[in-house]
Each structure stands twice: as C-alpha cells, then as structure tokens.
Length: 181
Image 1 (spheres, one colour):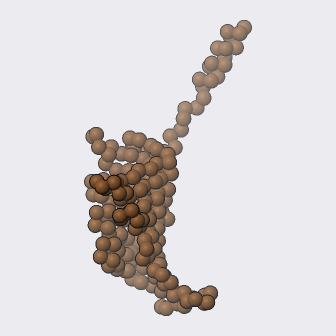
Image 2 (cartoon, rainbow, N blue to C red):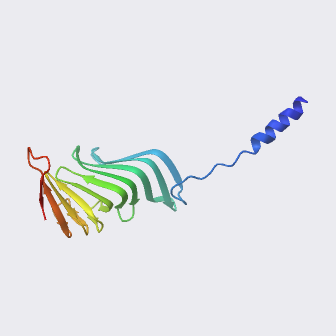
Image 3 (cartoon, helix red, strand yellow):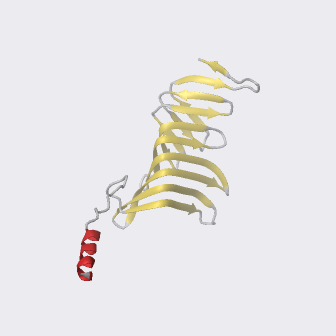
C-alpha cells in the first residue's frame, strides 16, 4: 500500500505544467536578472556603468553581438566624474556599430540638459544623441518641445531642435511660468 501511494505521489508530481517561457526577447543566448556591467580605461578609470533589471545577451559565433536590456540605467564617466545618465524602459546595445537604441520612456541627463522622448539613439564613440520622435528638451529653467526630434553632439555641445513648439521659462516666484509660442 505504501508503495502504491508513493507511486501515485510520484506520478502526480511529474504531471506539473512545464515552465512557461516568459522571456521578453526570443532567441537570446543568455538571460540575466539584475544585470550589471562596467567598463574601465587602461589606467583604471571608470568609463561607463550599465545596469538593468533584466538583460538578454545575443551571441554571434563566440562573441557577443548585442545586449537587449529592460529597466536600463547607463552612466558615463570622464576622469572619475559622471558626465551623463541614460534611463530607458528598453535599450539595445549594438557592439559592432557601438550604438545604443532606446525605446519606451527614455531620458538622457547631463550637466547641461535633460532630453525626454519615446525613442533615442546614442552613438557612443561620437557622443551623438539623436531622435526623430517628439522630444522634450529641458535646459535650466526653459523647456522646449522638439516635435520632429533632436540631434545633440555632446563633444561639441551643438544641438539642433527640429520643429520647436513651445518654450516655457520659469522665473523665481512665478508658479505658472511664462509661455512663448
């Protein structure tokens, strides 16, 4: 009787549903939770720090070809000082082109500006931030809506706001602000 009960329990345990694949990215070689990766220069100074709630690593042969990260925080450093922060719902790093494609709720912040959009592209070597989607550009007390996107060259500090719409300037003591059309 004991053997019969043990057999029934074993059969019942074996009939559980197989694990469902809840991956957000199909075809990835590796899936990691609480992902973190850092890059250092030859002299040991931190260049960037990438963290994500979940990351999918795709391989081509024996090398990583790209990483897709969800809940992404990407910090850049220069001489030990943080120079930029990118946050996005989804980010895809293309190693070959050295490009970071961002989607969802995306924000880029440095000491001069904050750029918010639903999509941004960041070329890491050239330090160029681009978008053809609607962008909100915040610089100090002014906010500009760039309806057809933006291009920011962080190396030269040249930025182009395509089809600007409204600029809002906040002044001390003014709760509503001032709007220019």
